[in-house]
Image (cartoon, rainbow, N blue to C red):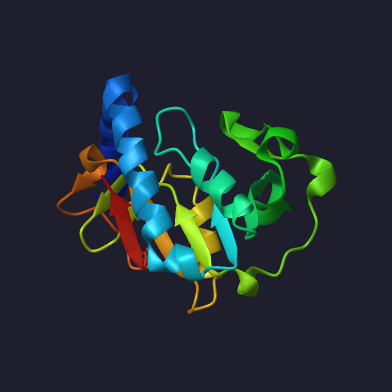
Amino acid sequence: MIAEEKVRLRKQMLFRLKNQPEKDRIHKNQVIFEKIIENEYFKRARIVMAYVSLSYEVSTRKVIRQALDLGKCVVVPWVKETERELIPVEIRSPEKDLIKGHYGIEEPRLDLVRPFEVEAIDLVLVPGLAFDRDNHRLGRGMGYFDRFLASLDSRTQTVGLAFDLQIIDRVPRLEHDIALSSLISN
């Protein structure tokens, strides 16, 4: 059963991520950061959406800062839990604009939440627990990112960020699961 496979794989990947040596994580994050800023999708993007990383995930802090320093518009997810919806919200200063939100993930302050034109987003940096070489991902199981990805314009590039230990042969998937445009790893 695919649902059971996903549950088992989520536990396995969370264990791997949380037990990765800090020294390795720091090095891999730097390698991934350099690949992102050299990526053509990132270079061309005017509007970048990035997830706000947890301590054990591929870090997006430097990418967000770099995008802002380059004059790009940066949006990050805000969770509208009542509708189980992910809303992109523009930020200008991660240090001032983000607070601890749902599931312990930092998200924009409530006073910053306003409608944002999803069709205008050029690039979305996508989190995941596991990825495969066909650019499929296994999320946390809540479906927020899956529903959001399904709503994107076909020209929007979606790029998964993964440590090498998160890449497997095949992610268990269902018909409605959407492949990403590409994957960046160390």
